[in-house]
Amino acid sequence: MPVVELAGVTKAYENKVAVSNLSFSIDAGQMFGLLGPNGAGKTSSIRMMLGITMPDSGRVSLFGKPFERGSLERVGYLPEERGLYKKMKVLEQLVFFGELHGLAAEVARSRATVWAKRMEIDEVLAKKTEELSKGMQQKIQFISSVLHDPGLIIMDEPFSGLDPVNAVLLERTLLELKDEGKAIVFSTHRMDQVEKLCDSICLIDKGRAVLAGKVRDIKASYERNRVIIEYQGSSEFLSSTEVAEAKNFSGHAEIRLKEHGNAQKLLQEAAAVATIYRFELVEPSLEEIFIKTVGGKANA
Image (cartoon, one colour):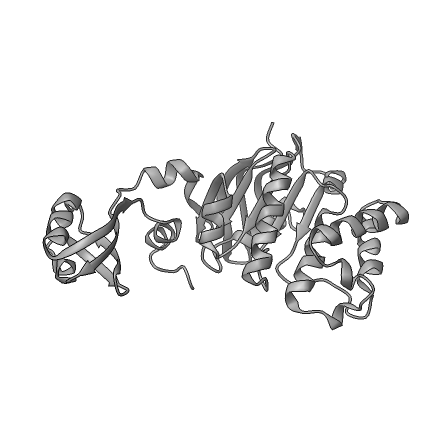
C-alpha cells in the first residue's frame, strides 16, 4: 500500500497549467526525489499532497485512503522558506510546533531535547532563533517536521543553508528514518544528494512527468559513455576521434565519448603516450541525465 499516491492529478491557475496528468506513488521505507527545473510544477505537486490546494482532476491518496485532513497528523513538512519565530527560544519553539501536531508539552519537550542532541544543536536550545546561523535554523526547521514521528516526510530543498559537514549529518539522519520505515519525498536541485539517497525519482518538466522510475534502472538505461582517466605523461589522447568532450585537471581527465565511441581504442591511444593509473568507464550522472532530459534548464 503506497503511503502517498497521485493518480492523474492536474492543477491549473488561471490560464497556466501547473501540473498535468501527474501520477506516482511512494511506499513506506522509500526515499523519493521530486525533481525538475524552476517552475516545473514541483511545489504545486507538494501543495496538493499536503492539501494546501486541491487538484482540478485526478486523485491524491495518503496512507491508502483518499485525501482527508486527518491524515495530515501523520505527515511532516519541511518548507523551502523557513517558518520560525525569530524572538522565540529554540526549545520553546520546538515544543510549540510539537503541540500543534497534537503532542503533550512534556512529550514534545523530551523529544525536542533528544532530536537536538541527535542533530548536534542541543547547546542552542536556550537561544533565540535570530541569534543562530542559517544552517542552525534549517536543522531546527527539520526537527520541527519530524518531532511528531510522521509516517510521511515531505521536504522542499532540505539541504539549503547546510555546510558539507551538516549536509552529511542530514543525509545520515534521513537514511536512518528511511530504515525505520518512513516514506520520504524531497525536492532539490542537488543531484548529488538525489543520486546517493533516492530509491526512485520523478522528473517533472512543464507540469508533466518526463522521466520516472528507480534511479538504478534509469541510469542503467543510458549508454556508458563517460570515461575517467588518471595518468602521467602526454595528454594528446584527449584529441582522439573517439572523444566528444574532455576536461583535463592535471593528470585527471573526465571524458565524454562520441555516440557509440570505442573506449578500448581510447585506452590504447592513451597508453601509447602516457602511464595510465586509472581507466574507468562509468554511466552518466543523474545531473547529466537531468540536463539532457529538460534541455539544459537545470539551473533555470
